Length: 246
Image (cartoon, rainbow, N blue to C red; front, side, top):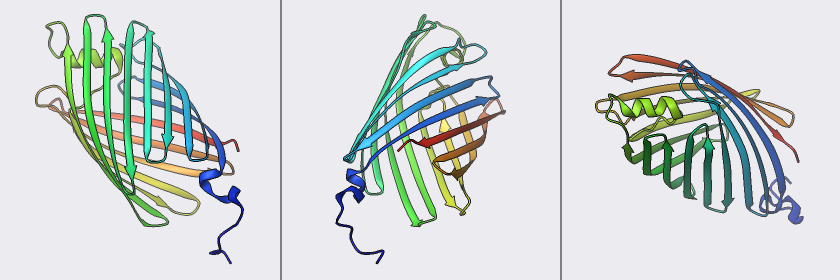
C-alpha cells in the first residue's frame, strides 16, 4: 500500500540528489530594477547554493552581488558580497537554526560607499505551521541595531539607501500564507516595519501567484507599500521561474 515503507534507500529524501536553477526579475516605482540567478544542489541532507544579482536605480549605478548559501539539517547559512562594484563594498551574512515550526536567525551586515559607512546586527524569529496539506502560514519578527557614519545632511539614511538600494529597517513584523488551489497557489503577505529615520513607518502588502508547469515553477508577485510621515505609496512587481534540473 501507499503507507508501506520502501526498502530502497534511494527513495529516502535524505539520500536523494537534486538540483535546481532559479531566475527572478523585479522592478518598483522607486525606479529600481533587479535580476537574480541562483543555482542549488542537494544530496544526503546537504544543500549548497550559488548565485549572482545585478541591480540598479535612478541614483544607484548598476552593481553586481554574489550570493552563497548552505543548509545542513537544522542549520542554514547565507552570505552576500558586493565587491567594490560602482564604489560600493558590502558584505552581509546570516546563520539560522530551524527546529520544527520555529527558526532563529542571526544576521550581520556592513557597507562602505564614499563617505558613508553602515554597520548592523540583527535577529529574526520565524514561526511556520501547516493547517493542512494545502494551507501553510507563518509569522516573522526581526530587530536590527543599526549605525551609519555619514555627512551632516538631512536624511542621510535616505541618501545612503537611494545610492546603495540598501533600505534598512530597525524592526519588522510580518505574516504570510500559502494556499494550494490545485492548478496554482496564492501567497498573500503583510508586514509593518520601522525605517531608521525618526518617526518613519512602513506598511506593505503583497500577493504572489505560483504555477507548476512540468519541472518548472512559475511565480509572479505584486506589492504595495505606504510610507509615513511622507504619505508616499510605492509599488513593485516581480516574476521568476525555478526549474528542477534532476
